[in-house]
Length: 441
Ligand code: GLU
Ligand code: MG
Image (cartoon, rainbow, N blue to C red; front, side, top):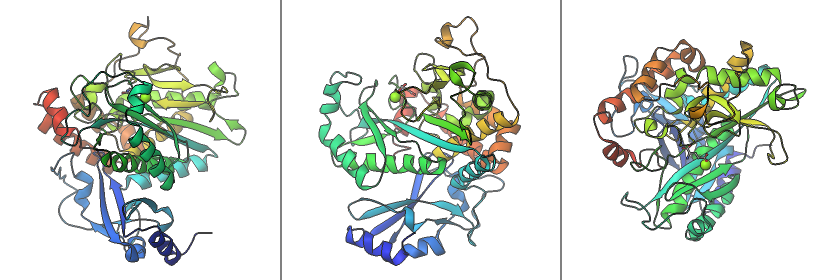
């Protein structure tokens, strides 16, 4: 039974909480927040805190990409559920916000509600959905320069133990916040870190991504570090992915195992993977559409820049993970193409929505690409990885409008087009410098 708000306030007060944040993550992928003193927690639920509709077209910097339908007039609300408030640290607690109309109905541009609608659509089809997230990020110095200058060893015990005080603090802060961290390691890129989260229901998984970004950033700041979630933090550096894992099950069991297809994939599971691959050209602007995304989406970066699938294939957009004892949560499809400039609610809605569409249309699973697609005798058709091409594909896509609504596509296109105009003329070194902290919490 949910505790009353008064009881929740007392619990939080006992834990030293003074301020409660409710955050929204916008189409540009930036997380913004308003706060109330703890005693006003119920107001955050009842009336919500006011935000201008322009919050949906705020850009990666201080720009605002007004559209014909989103201007300066009007008022929307951030509402939070007191049961979802998590203790962060230093008197701060946080909950994921939903964007609502003043009366309380979800706003057209509430991306969290969009994902919730996809989750409901799956449930109506009798499907249980699980989503797991990986967060790659880069430790940087407070002034935005590299955190370290010495040699780096990917996954190195040295490179992780060098940061043990931070990592222990991170684990403890996550635990206190109720964040289900599965694994932590230093990654391939210089000063790069990865945190993977346990699979859960889609909205909870996207909420967990935001919580993880907050927890990572708070713990890092206590150890003289900042955390960059830029798709590429420095020119020439390894990219940061924001891979999502998806699994689906009906009343007879998982769709991605136990069947007669390749690696045990059942027909509906094959259609789900086909649906994801089919929509990649249209939705790449959702998954990896920022001014820095194209720097990462290159062959050889394990960023899944090829529109195909393959068992444990890290160069394929969809890496298939089969049900084995080595996969504790069972078979799943990992969409590697996504980077952290993507709004996690929107990316998950696009991923799940395109899988459901594939099932609905009975799409056939394309042939597997078991090797590096760049070396394949039948390479997949190229994706529109450049920002201009990705924006145009998104803007002209009927599938994107159908899956994500025309309003959401309009807002996303507006903020990404602003980036193209502002950062397109700059060099990669200038753009990485300008946007290194754009998606940080
Ligand atoms: N850093 C890679 C990316 O940009 C992924 C590396 C990996 O497979 O974990 O997505
Ligand atoms: Mg990784």
